[in-house]
Length: 247
Image (cartoon, rainbow, N blue to C red; front, top):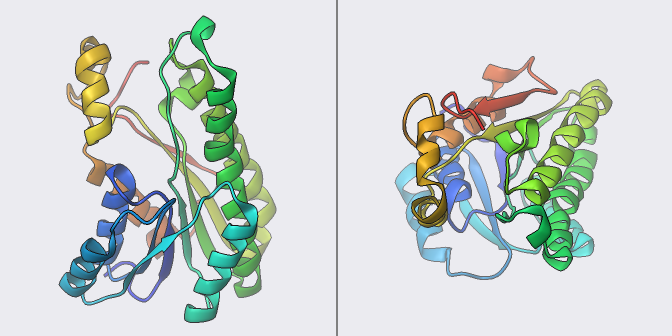
């Protein structure tokens, strides 16, 4: 029960890593607000997850790139719970293409989701946390944002920005007792990535020291650590969860 009673907002929870984070947080006793961009029928899953763990799991739908909608929904949480303890900025998009094939419209959209969307939540939620004088913000970066990767220049650019945002905001928000950290996963075996991996990146398994893809719950467990009081003196860190991957 490492997160017992903590009010946690997690974005991008309809599948993959975000869903695993929501499940891990609920298991640890958190009150979970599980975000998705559109109503995708999470009510049944949320009800079962809440019942299983004797907590609250509330689906909340909004587009992270829509600042006014973000403000409205975050204030709904604040009104209902009187606080927000943990924010996990997980919502994101990814593309795989060489520089000549990058489509600027898609690049701009990815920048909006991965960078502007992350900042929208960080800005609004940190205001609430500043009044509380407490809170943990966890951003989802990537190993390619730190080390780069052939065929992912546009994605790496957005995640590099998330890393810079994390480090700068950690320094600014430390005086309000708000911790800001990021997780930089390597290759994670989500349903979406497994298809891409089998088609285009199967040979890259040789670059992973552990010789396998990460499981989504292995990313989620690091989020539990960063959201809990176990990491009470940890801020401004980019924590790699990559199984010793050489990009």
